[in-house]
Image (cartoon, rainbow, N blue to C red):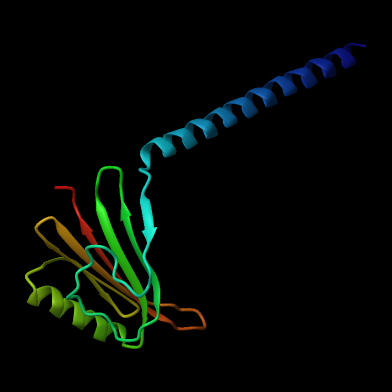
Length: 158
C-alpha cells in the first residue's frame, strides 16, 4: 500500500512538472514570436516586369545585353527606405563583372564603401549622397555553375 501511494505521488508530481515545462516552453515560444514580429519591419515588395527597370534604378548602370533576368523588384520599408533590385544570369566571369562595376562606380562619382573580391564571390558597394548601390556577383557551386549579378540601388529616407 505505501508503494502505491509513493508511486501515485511520483506520477502526479511528474505530470505537474511536465505541465509546467510545457506551459513555460509554449509561453517562451509565443513571446519570442511576438518579439520577432514587433522587431522586423514589414517590407512592401513590388515585382516589376522584366522588360522594365525597377523604379529609380540608375539607367546608366551597365547591364549585360540579352541576360536572363531572374529578379526585378522595388521594396519600401515602413520608415520610407527604398530599394530597387535587378538580378540576372551572366555569361562573363566574376572578375570581368567586378571590373565593370568597380569602373562604373569610380567613373560616376560614387565612393566605394565596401568590397569583397574572393574567387567564388565578389561584392562592391558604393554611396553617393543618400544613395547606395551594391553589386553582388557569385557562382552557383551546384551542377549548373550559373553565375549571377545582383544589383541593388537604395535610398535612405530624406
